[in-house]
Image (cartoon, rainbow, N blue to C red; front, side, top):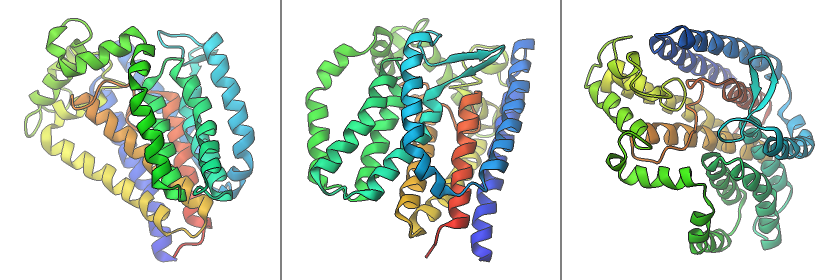
Length: 356
């Protein structure tokens, strides 16, 4: 029991350590009235997320199994609505009121995990019809998100689906067959991408070919990371962020702020904290005896890992720019609130599911 309580509380404390680091980075990169407002808004989202966590941490995770289908249908309708009334260069947000916007795809990440966990925990994933049914269940939202367009999140959904299908017991030959088909039709998928999405992939391979256009962000992020050296330039002393050479440093490229101001040592400490955070979730996922809880916690683990890996990867130039936020660190209300919901579910699973 003591170990169980330790595990729960460790997840919560690690979450808030990451949040505090994120807030320090947001403030450290704030050099204008507008960016100071971003920092203050982030605090508001953290407070709102904390309230949500305090409420949902006592919400029995088994109730999510009952709610997963209604939530799935509701968010499918929202994703369809985004294509009609959404705004922005990519139609991903629905305007609520005043400064409040809502990004359905961020919240659908957890709904997606819940519906797949419910589906695979109640059926035998080894059977081909069940596996194909899961593809349909996952394919509908993936297609709608791809149409926004939001290729990064769509790829997240695909990886999460195959990962959960494998954990649930799907046959390797079924998984490899579908993946092979995907590879064979990839040229057609390339033609279906938006122009800017194709340019992002090309720029990823050769950013210097368009240094003032699509390659600008990637080149500036590499400069920011490299300029940090071993110990960093010092808090609030980074030239790339303080002089606004690096765009989107509050959102997609917040990792560059850390690298520039705190250097390699700061990056190592930060990644170790994230690894500890993931290890706590993994321990719950690997030890619970409840199949639904196992799949949900595994899905959340994979989601957090992918977001961390992809965000750091794209900031450092080893992956294409995908618009994936760094959990609890990147600016964004939808991302923060969705992440708090995920942690509340993990917390409740740790308290209420039978562990070995």
